[in-house]
Length: 231
Image 1 (cartoon, rainbow, N blue to C red):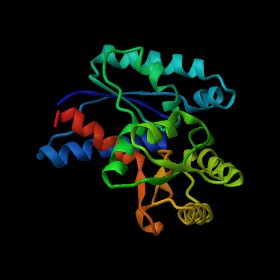
Image 2 (image 1 turned 60 degrees about the vertical axis):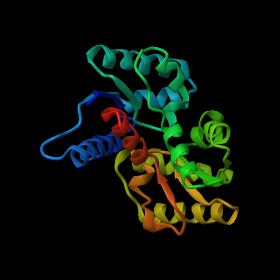
Image 3 (image 1 turned 30 degrees about the horizontal axis):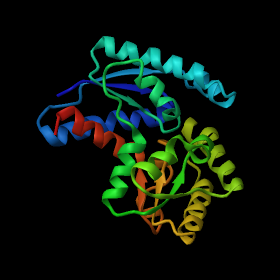
């Protein structure tokens, strides 16, 4: 089994889920008392969020790159960024180390493509929904049409992520608002929805909507398990 390095804490609410999924996945595959070999560097998310919101992505990339180097030096053989949004700087981070980085959009796009999805809706932070670093992978590598919510809906989704989910608040009214967005995207032609923020799966579950939801945290963790075991 390979040792995986996690860049976590963005937010820690979802990093907890990564830790659980990785350990459960290794246990289920190997049985007995087996658990995942994990190294983690958990950042202070307030510092990273300030860099994001002020557009200081170069600084965010340098900080995560340094953390990635520390994980490699400590013995990590694979690397994961435990958040969708910071994959905006995934290329920069990967360039600081010699170990493979498991990209969340690539893993998610591959899963949806295997299911035959051609048109997909994308929820996430405003950076993930509005910029091209995530959508381009879905379009160029997997040939998908990507739909995003209307501007007012994007603001609401982003607010819920940062003001509620990242601090552990799960509000029924926000779940209903997200459901309405999913329904609107479905009517526009989306065959499925990517929960493109690792916190959204804390709010929306598969039974909450009438179309498939792709939980990026779960898919990312499953891909990591495959690569950890070399299967």
